[in-house]
Length: 449
Ligand code: ATP
Ligand code: MG
Image (tube, rainbow, N blue to C red; front, top):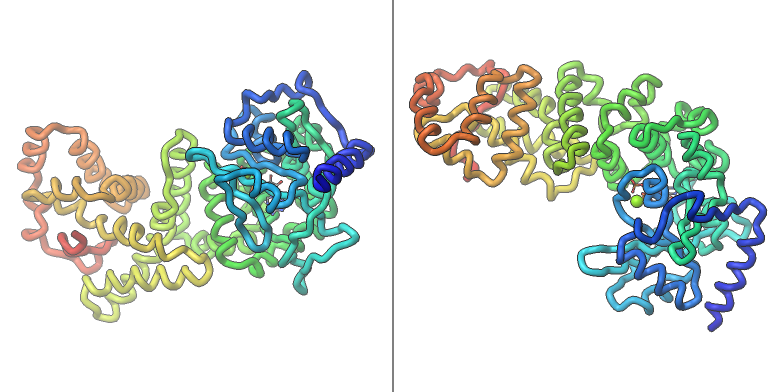
């Protein structure tokens, strides 16, 4: 009862705001049909109980740009507890921000309560010495919720009940002008959350928008603040950036502005190295292509590629120290993953897959007898083969070897037998002399089964 009264009160206050523009469906073209069933169930239920409820953020932005939204987020004036009591299959999550996840079938809708912005007066937000917010869970009204968002195009609210868009920050205009404009003072907003600088780069590249001058100017100076961001969050954001389908253009854009060092702490040491650079760009081009054509791109594969050249270097160091090939290779894998874990926070759960992809690489050359067949039946064959293609593309292995495997996969059993018999004797590992200086490390054929 009180909540409904408050909701109505807040609603009134908002509609009186001078900055608010309410845009009807004839002008913006988004209807309920564009919204998933689950998201509609959430907003309809909340509205039926007297709360305000909107689709917000990336989904509205993407629909306005005729793109398919990744997910639908809901913003409401109901508290997390109030939301939770309305949906049987829901739970409250998060510590820094308390949110509710509402489940229907396989779909999950994230519902967040309107929050106050950092500049809000009655404010209990906590920030550290650099101005970074470490806690900001203060509820606010609709307008403050719009103002605490990062970019104007991310602060558009769609009301599925009325099919209306609520725009407090001139987001519609910026969508039309293809401009990424930050809400509020750029320096302050980046200090509050340095990750917004990475988000700026990601959205500009992904949407092909221009970062407006005010939002761009402080980045060069403030990019170093990213090192204060907890590494797990940085990992998440880096992953989003690298898996955005536009990783190459994001990185090129950052490089052309000399920002790659501080803005991409994770990648810059790898990019600085001429040797790994080419391989990384080939890997990112490949990942971009996969994502743009709707193919899966796994984080494990991506990190296997990013760390491949450092791995080879580490292996050479160990060989030079007279270690045996096999233990040197295993130790080098471990070294590289542990070293990067510190800066990148690559989750340990990815280690297994990354190592499998690496370990399978040398088995591609060992095709004699039934080896090729056995390799083909490995769970990670496909990922390892994609990796091989990359190595061929960058001249690390013969293109003929990659082509052989492409052909072998497509061939029928008879043809496969012929292909194996036709192999030159040198392809049989037992008859070949190993060179310690070989560019790629070697592993024992069966060690990973
Ligand atoms: P996408 O999901 O396509 O990457 P998105 O805009 O939906 O893009 P999310 O990370 O899902 O991004 O966040 C949802 C919304 O939350 C954003 O649109 C924005 O309004 C707000 N938001 C997210 N991160 C921040 C941030 N660091 N600072 C301020 N607002 C943010
Ligand atoms: Mg989103």
